Length: 159
Image (cartoon, rainbow, N blue to C red; front, side):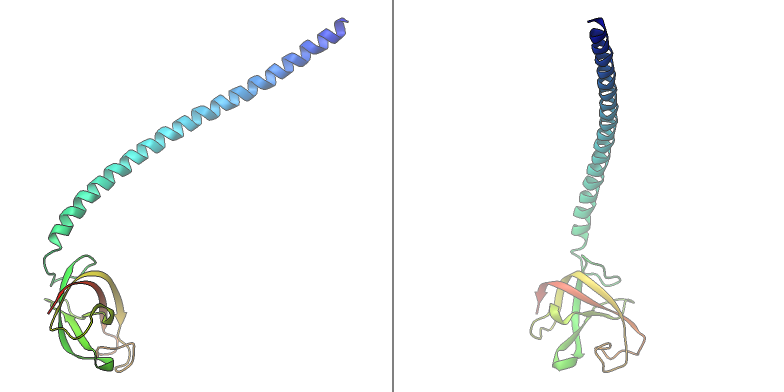
């Protein structure tokens, strides 16, 4: 019958229209994803460039850091630490050899035994404020309120 065929044509057109809309939506999503991919690729290229520049600076910095620091102390620098006396439990206290950069002490964990000096690359530094003399908050006998740093090093040489 003609009404059945007519209904099927209408249904078919409706299905095709819906499918066409789905395809259009998917095409739009595909275009958006391609644009996002291009943006991400550009960002990745920029990051690779920055990383390459950083690596070059790092190589240069590593070469410079083989000199003993005495005017500033940063992670990666090499410091020379000399004994200055005895602290808690009779352990020697080591102070960084410095020029106008006082209160840089070697961490107790960074030294074994009682060497005459320690040469080490700084791997961590902790800033502290001295508490009351004779307490754990002031292991170096500084005036209360004095800022000091405890440096942890990778030992390069000790004597």
